[in-house]
Image (tube, rainbow, N blue to C red; front, top):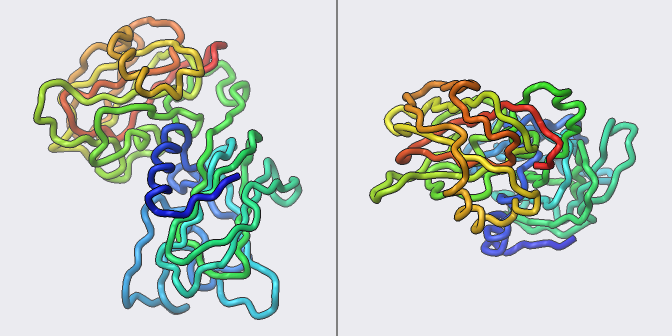
Length: 344
């Protein structure tokens, strides 16, 4: 387990982590705080928000200065504060970010993180991040070496104070026997482990936004590229959560009105699991993958459904290339299919 604290190094490492994991503590995905010892100054739920923390000078509420995060009162009787978070999905944790931005004279000097699988009141807790020093007004990244799947985490702060954001980066580990039961599921859902691996551009929004299970909140909650001023089109490559046969596709342009793509198409292939990390190689290969769905016209601000008859029968596929022609924004992509024996 290693810690990264300098801003530049964290930004670089977070970009690398984003290609192999999602934030399992993201409230948009369903993560929730279920208990804490104290939240007098700022509620636990605020710590799980997906937005970057902000500081609003002069904003106060009945408890004192309004802070964008979770903040406990000053302890006077010994001990330390803690909170328990139910992750959006059980998964393997690879890194933890404890963000104290805007907490300067009220940050915790140290913190630790534990994980459990199952009922947090009965399950055994495993240390993922041992007690580690924190600094004021900064991001602190800790890499985790543990291959087990965890459903809950417990953040301990020593002794008290405020944390702006907790992000638990990991890979969902669904039980496919329970998840699908032979039925069609969204194989492009981030909750099951789907992940964007490579893309042409993400100026206004990351392609992983498209893989969230909820509806898009606004135009900022989707994949959007800059205006293309050269020939060609934008694209992204997605590793499905599991290899499967695709029966139905949804391309949702909700909130994109003057900037929706004119058309889209899909290509797909069945690849070995170890290819998931080879983004540069996949970019070249994907240009020649067989067509799963030929060009289809899109409209502004609506869900487009494409059923069996509009899809080519490619058998089992594990990776897809979404072509957005020529550019623009897509809120959500859903690929409903039946998981197959081949690993995704």
